[in-house]
Image (cartoon, rainbow, N blue to C red; front, side, top):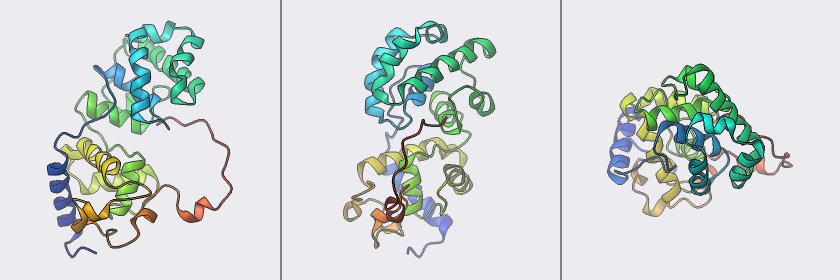
Length: 240
């Protein structure tokens, strides 16, 4: 366990992550807030790479909320099918666009409350849009990478995204909330994988309390004990 007090260790972590990933950014491809909103809805239980493949076609067909509201459901489902859960995602896209037209003049709102009132939009999606489309972070995006690394780095002992986010918001300065998620996501994808974390070559090894342990068993959504239980049937993803 690192000897530094937690506050100092987190400050040092942020400094090293900033130097290691100076160009970290959202890896969903978008050119405006509406595109990011729709791409993030599609990203539930799907990789950014796959979403970007789908949105190339989607954004050519649907450029405004009116386009999403008017496109036939079957056509929309066919386009987004590769992202998984395509029927519910297509419904969310259409309902979200209809709400934008009915309540926001066709514009993507810039508040957490307004965004999370949209169909298919939860706190995670709202945080992505606010932080990356508007530069107005109201929280920290907690995806599976952020969840895993928060546990391994000793930033949070919680499992739920809400509690992890609360811990990160308490320990990290607000101006760094948006980029923090990108630093952790990039580190999770490039160095600290779920099954084979590369602790030997890790840039923050000296600041990580899990580096001398079996990090593959720490901070993951499904612990080894849980994996022994019978797997439940896949469910429709909730709003993220």
